[in-house]
Amino acid sequence: MFAVEWLRQGVPVDRETSALGNLADAVATTRARAELVAARHPLDEPDGFRLLDLTGAVLITFKLLTKRQ
Image (cartoon, rainbow, N blue to C red; front, side):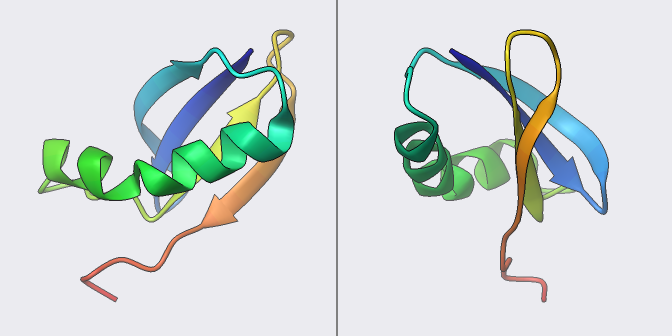
């Protein structure tokens, strides 16, 4: 299980939970959800995300290309 923090310029704009147990699967699923999350936050469209483990440690951070860039 992972926490997903959606980021705009490094600042969290949303947080979700992924019930997937495999990091690679969680990354792929989260990347696929980027457009849905952007639609929920039209004024603060996320430009990246980070995955955290159950202890809150950051495992990986991704930068996304957005329509504004």
